Length: 177
Image (cartoon, rainbow, N blue to C red):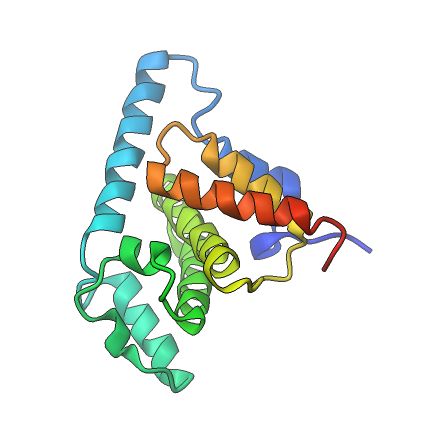
């Protein structure tokens, strides 16, 4: 039986996505790309979720279909939702599902990498703040993904901290499903 990972990608395909920019021959290009990704990620985390943005509209639609209260999103930034312990686990699931879907649909590698980052941040938040694993991935695979993401030069410091805490939980639960 062939093992599957997130989005139906094999582990080596995911590693390729996460190593985006790592093999650039020109260090200036790599630095520019890292700076651009870092800036885009910070903007995504800091801005209040605007109405009529792709992420917000998709979240509202998904949560509404599942009967969840969407008032918890009002005026909050994506970073707040992902990093605050009181964020509802169902909201984190909706962000995870939406980010997963977006990562498939986006043409830009940079935007897909950011959607993947948000996906794993939602997984990490559920683990750290709610002691819930909201994916079928093993703890071992999750831990590996958190390590890969934390090593990205463009990764936001607050997410590196969240990924580190989630990685430690994964390590303590190795072998569990």
